[in-house]
Image 1 (cartoon, rainbow, N blue to C red):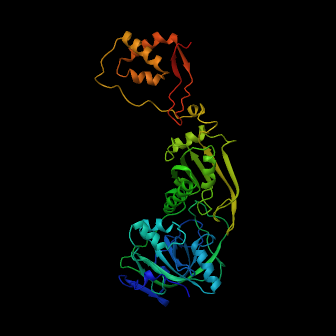
Image 2 (image 1 turned 30 degrees about the horizontal axis):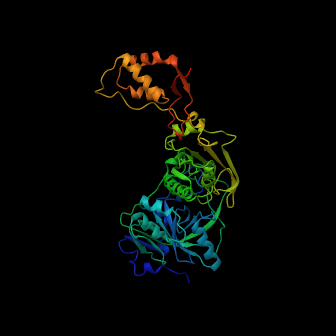
Image 3 (image 1 turned 45 degrees about the vertical axis):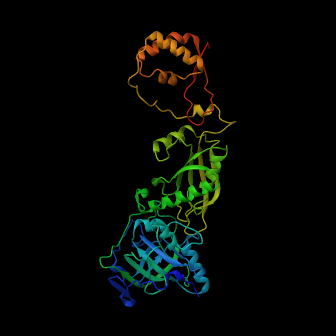
Length: 449
């Protein structure tokens, strides 16, 4: 017997508040808008979906985004080829029991629901995860033909069975993937037999673009936040002082940036290893780690750090034989397992022998901040020269410190006063341990020649 959650006893039926229920011979998927999404797709797809299934061992609900390829008016294919997909894991369990797997397909819905469906929390019912996003228990109702539950705000629900007793034998695809490619080969998946369709009066059939020339602008961009959360949590758990994680949209989830505060010499390399392996073992394929002064949300600063803080021979980390998505086009495979190399780029200033002058050599160039103050009493050139000499005798001074000290005085007088002292001044490298990025300049020292 498959367990069900007692929390869902005595729930209202799905038929309360819906306009129509189609069962038996009335089931007809062509009543929904069906059309070709991409030039080389194998058929029309219903792809803005959340497929609900129940673990037959634990009774816990899982829902996730899976595409449906049209086969006939009451059947589709469902792409569940990845071994880590929970729906596939559930389906294997049903298959072992010799029974087909009940599912409910929610079409459309709030964006927050989509994001919640992409988060994986072990040993937790996905309705509890959804409730966590809303800050209140998730509102769900029972389906018409099974004991599955769906969000009460569902616009359209397709109820049916994944025919696991038949196996993964039905050709499915190709489809224009979120990667901006068609993946590899012609995958085989299970068939979904539709038993019932319910929809509200004026129900909204939600559709979103996927793939295309700008995959980072499609509906799959909501997946980025879940991968960012995976990486951030894994880095933090490993003791890395992580500040930001960012998945740039144009990288189609396969490129990740992290901004960290380096404390140990191996922080950056260890961070790369974690980033490349922690999110479902698939993503990303390419990772970058940057220092805390680099704005990883600014492409210009990212390129600058990659250009000037990266040593290809020292700062490249390659991990061979890593798990990746089966639709990875470089693998040219249509089913798992597939693997290829992953790469990481350490774009941080190396900690070599402590905080040394390399910190200053690699620090970013920024203009001095601030302006001339008001209400400053004017000084003569002689007074400025005398005061400046005392100021430099107290401690080594950078030119910025000198300008700041005499801010508000006419700049010709400041420069001429300095010129009178320059023949008695020397320079020294500023080695004060103010790492990482506040070293100002080489310093002027009185009495040096």
